[in-house]
Length: 228
Image (cartoon, rainbow, N blue to C red):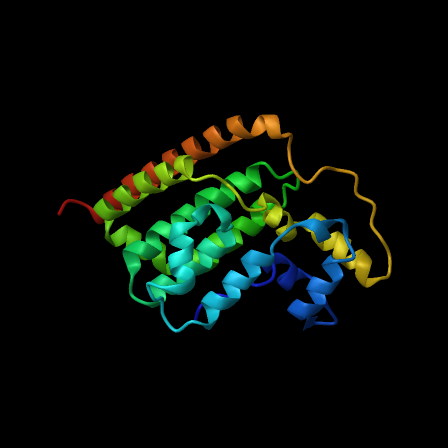
């Protein structure tokens, strides 16, 4: 079954009352009453919803549009796309989109002022990457090629989506929504993101850290497999 991602995972997991899970619609309504209401995830949520409804991935429609315009889709969409591609037995493509999503999400998390989003990103990586990483482990030459492709894609492709989507997965948003549930408005003067002038440096460091992590992972997997 394709993983669900229409609403923030962390909010869906944490914002519960009396053991019952709040609905996505309830959470969306509550977010509208918080400082996070202007974060634009409408395209993201529509794309994710459409991907989840599809049986398999076809070369037309939304998939074709994502391939033509990857700059406007957030990592959330790419995570779900990778899940659908794996489900459709298109595993090499799934590997590319998962790691592309992971790298972009890491960059978005690194320029976010809410440190708690990094924990949310680990949840996303685990939720969407389990099967794909096992496949990558078994296909090391392909994995190495994919990582090279992903890092080039990251440098070549602009980020023309609302990078603050990741903020919706943090504890600051959770606290704001909790306050809204109680009929209060939580004052939060901290900016959503680090200063824009710092982003190029954050981007370079994020890509390099990702590349090194993937190289280390590749060496570890190769050692586990032993000589062939």
